[in-house]
Image: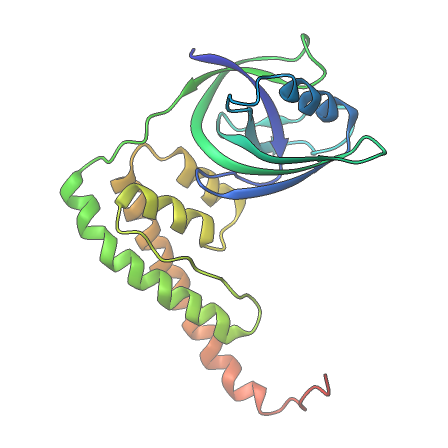
Length: 224
């Protein structure tokens, strides 16, 4: 194991580079933030975000968590008069949890191994970049056409590793699929999975918008 890392279980998956705002209400996680703030300001203050596998974010019982997570690096901390904290964090390094200590602190502490960001098959990764970029743009357009979800896409990077994480963060997937993308060993494999996922989603959205377009004519326009 590489380090001992405070763990913050959430009902979502944090990915490298993804901005994650957090409101800290529970006393055990307030204690975690206070502990982080005692660290030197010139050091990276971080904790591990792990997606909940079973249980709840809040309450007395500590939930069961997935074994691959991502560090959350503090970028901004605001303490409120009532003791709450508002945080802005950014996803950092992936890690795998080994043993979990439930006793030495009010929050979970994991013995973690940091996972390298491997490219994998370089040729396969490069060949996936343009198709995945095009599918992501088509996916965002189809989602917008449904009128339910708008995705504000950044410029899609050409670097396969960075692109694989941007797609994983931007695609509207369930927790299980996003957790699988986080845990995938390398960028080439992650991009291949994302290409298949986006093809599936674009196909489904085409059917939804095709069926929905004729039905929209029967609906009176909203006065709002």
